[in-house]
Image (cartoon, rainbow, N blue to C red):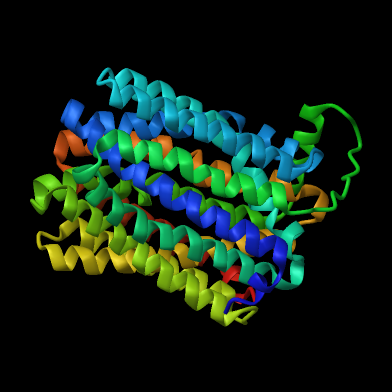
Length: 399
């Protein structure tokens, strides 16, 4: 289950990332609650999510070219420092009691710009840390780190907001980036120089897109991630409203709901890590996608706290299984020289579609209620994955 942690480079990186991710989730929950307190608007919650993700849509492909050209470790050191500075800026504004929704939106845009260059390097550096032999296990353990933080971070956020205040949550996030920065300085990676046919960035970008377009399987896998991102993950940004208006459980209940999705995702990630390089990956991918859609529909219709928690556990488990499988299949089947660009398109569909999903969900929640917005997303995902199963029957045969 933990075989890739036997490799020092990955072990150091993984531990530093885990600490940083806990801080990030603490800030995310605190920021969602802060925006809701300042505005009482479902639409503006969606706007903040939109602004955080829209730079990824615009710049992520160039981030992929950069990841294929430069040392990924150095890129990540620069991006983590930038994330840390932005967290401290928000913490200071909150502490001075001069924070406004406009300032939160401005920092969200800057975070998105940094993420556009961070994500492709972070996704494609894993194979350089562990090699292809341990790649599936390492990607699963990355999901373990991410989803452990989804449990720990939101639970801590509910306590910390009540004890040290909003600004304290943002300061903690800023400090947490030091863990991954120190880890990155301590790992040693031999950079394999990719051979580009030309030095023009746009030509290199075009070559990567042509490679993706020519591969039917890659297109199908990426489209599945895009639909989940567009219609399936807005429940995260709308969770404060669901907790407050539908379930009436407040910020402590919000922390439990967020942690429930994280718990399910952690279980899914651990199962994948234990399975290793197993057969029938395609069948598990399609099954997980349908479980995700049905669970989201159940959550949208729920009016009870326990049923909502159960549905979120299933949502977390099925979503991390599906996304981790797509991530691994893409990296295994792509040529080394295209990996950064392919993973930038993966992140483009995963994070770049989120702003539009957040706007759609925020608008629907404002007009027809948060339950309808989530129900619409669940039904849309279910219809799409049914169609994928029919149009791309070869997916179920991937092993």
